[in-house]
Length: 270
Image (cartoon, rainbow, N blue to C red):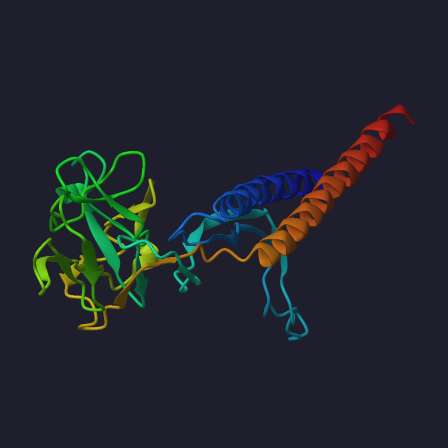
């Protein structure tokens, strides 16, 4: 009966509402460095089986199709797109971009991420009062391993292998102060999003393998550049319009089912 149509359309409205939330978050982060766009994936629900396919009648004729009534849809999950974002030249010595696979490693509280470490693609670093390289987010997460920049450093250099050097006053040759390391995952789409431009390891992502950039499949790092968000506003706006139209169609289906049930209810008067 039309009651199934009501339930199916209601699940459609719920799933499309989730998709709208995902699209809105993508558009909100169109200027967030290192941000990776997400998409909502859907799956259909159970079916009411009224007739099985392949059933034979008394004459031996086989039924070519079945009769199934679907019960709607649900959001099966959100999937992140880890495609490379556009390179943006900044000219800042502590801006670092990853070209290829990998994540910067930073220290966090154990309550935020297991093991006290989290991962990011945002390479807009600064130094704190102790001279340590930190993220320029609200919490100032410290890069792991810790790299300390002397307060009298005249220039800072970072090569594609992550080696960090500084030139001090009165010195001709640069001095090595540390190396940026990158973490790689077998399934980065399984990482847990925890905010602050950070991801945390999960059972789905697998364990991190940390090492020197430009080795074992890890990307290279480039100084004076940042990786922009990989959100494509044009695609997101198209998805937004498609979602809005689908929402309207499901709302119309609910109205049609409600009108049908009302007509059935009115039959009692005759």
